Every structure is written in C-alpha cells, then in structure tokens.
Length: 66
Image (cartoon, rainbow, N blue to C red):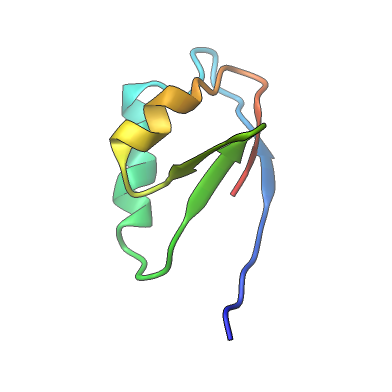
C-alpha cells in the first residue's frame, strides 16, 4: 500500500524559485528515500531533479502542492 501526504505552500521569494532555492530543495529532498513531487497548476516536477524544478517557473506568489 502506498501512502502519501501533501502540503500546499505559497512561494514567498521576491525572485521566485530560481537556481539557489531550487538547489536547496534538491539537496533537502535527496535526504529522503521517498518520491517527492512539486506541482504548480498542471505541471509536476521531481523535487530531486533541478532540471524538473526550474521549468515550473514558480514566481513570487505561486501556489505549489508538495
């Protein structure tokens, strides 16, 4: 059986999720063996992959589901 949790968050960074915050997300997510997805509207990204996160274009005020 697969369990899942979700949390909705709002991006509160003036420049949104750019390279530095995305790299911090990746480093943190890599500590866990589970799958971590971040969703913005109809797009989804693997939180352990920088090249997935950047195209989300999560600007300041964006709502994300983790």
